Image (tube, rainbow, N blue to C red; front, side):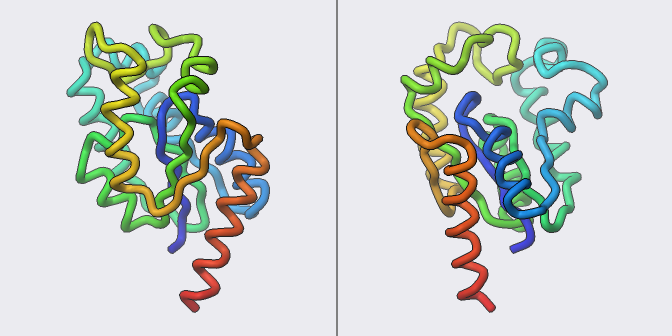
Amino acid sequence: MTTIVLIGMAAAGKTTVARALAALSGWAMVDTDALLEAWWGAPLQAIRDHLGLEGFLDAEAEGIMRLSMRRAIIATGGSVVYRENAMEHLVRQGWIVHVDASLATIAGRLHNVTSRGLAMRPGQTVAELYAERAPLYARWAQFRVCTDSLDPQAAAARIWEHFSTLTEHAS
């Protein structure tokens, strides 16, 4: 395994935990939402508005399929789990970690629902989105860390400790 891939809901803390994990491990950190914005030259919300939901999900998957990394922490967009080909590619890249948080925590942290570029259907609530995605995150995750009561450094330490144990047993 040469990368650690973080999946989870918006506001679960993927990017923040990824930064802490990169600092701890000495590995590079890549945020796929930032890459998508760079490829398109626009904020996520503008991309989402321009492409529509399905087009956005396809564009996100296309960007994921371009990734080939080693010794990297990859923070993905929350909607990456909707495209099987993207997730299979990420599994080939490395170890999948679900950065999880309760719906109450997500709701408390998520203040910019209409401008954040969330891949939601019209009229869909955050609670509905959370319920829809939870089984997808569980399906793909090889490890789960809950950020409800852990700060980013503690979450990163827990991930790195588990990853290090896995890689020691694999050698």
